[in-house]
Picture (cartoon, rainbow, N blue to C red):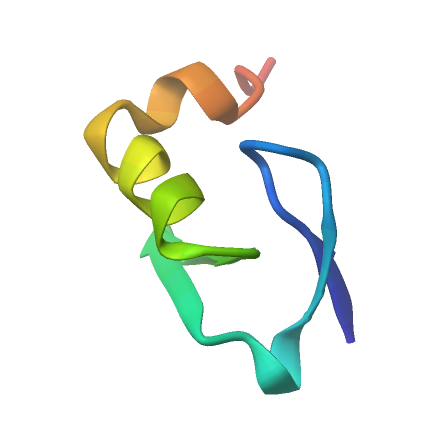
Length: 51
């Protein structure tokens, strides 16, 4: 499964992802620890609002 890093937009293979996070039951994969750190600091900046 291929996921999109919500911070930088890169594609990340879920099976090989080294940097992941879960929020509200959704798994997010990141290309690097920097993107994961930015996401964890302010996740609402990178997650579209649910309508």
